[in-house]
Length: 378
Image 1 (cartoon, rainbow, N blue to C red):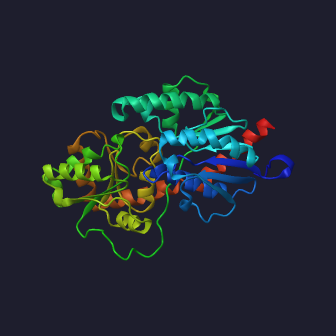
Image 2 (cartoon, rainbow, N blue to C red; image 1 turned 180 degrees about the vertical axis):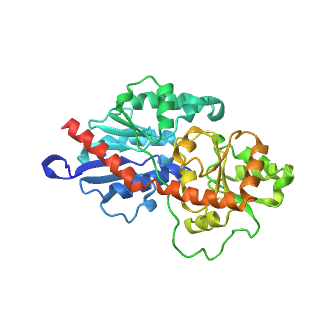
Image 3 (cartoon, one colour; image 1 turned 90 degrees about the horizontal axis):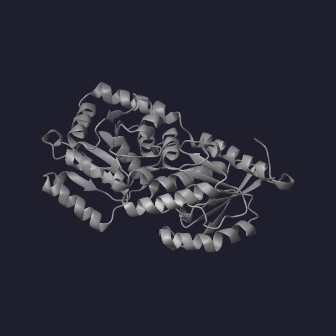
């Protein structure tokens, strides 16, 4: 793939990374991984706008434009984008804009745009996400789909959700997946908080659709009394208090530990030490946490939902058919942790499943989409 922009120069791509923020680890992982791999393509020259410069510095062949931390709030991000993005496009002589989320400027910019749709949950499940978010999401999605030149869905499940949620021309939609990060080969942290007791691990934010409370209630069952539940991810003081109160109420407060954010090396250690990783989510666009757990050698117990079943090989995870039932989680965890051959088969199949996805392949497909847009507009 050696096509170039005007005058034989690399195609100038502006990546809108304004939606990145610490509490949205999936988006941060996607942008960081895709940008790093796209930067390896000689036919592209990237400029990235983000408030999370620390995620990318140093990074060869990518120009970073730093946005203020205030853009991590949605309303302020919209205002900043409207005031600044068109100017940046002109100054950088941008030929195509790549938006890793559905947030596009309200005023259409004068270059083609490639947009990524990760998750249609807010458009389909207002009871889980809230009606306010449903209304905002629908309005934003309709606008962005009307102005984007090409749309990438991260899974066929997301593409199906998109087709059922919004009436639109599906010929401009394509599917390009994601990948998981492998094990970080570095020394362990000097002070580890990993427990010596057997534990089940949950990784991610505590958004309503993640269904974490159901997993917690599973630990009220006496059959799991010899396990601790360890969670990592973004956590506010009020969320910590509520979760600890729930654990105390159901009699396992001394076996519940939310560690908040952890360093990458400690997360790898947790994956390696976990009896299993539990993913009780009710809706996902792709299933990045599942692949990342499998890539790190952890057996996975996961909700049987379309996106996760699409991403992972059918025998690479233990599937919970009733994800809203705490007893189903208790039984699944016991089935995996109490059967050594089954646990090992999940680890082996998970490694194969995760290995079938790579950020290099993802970036190659995205690069082809970006170049095709510039060819079409030439």
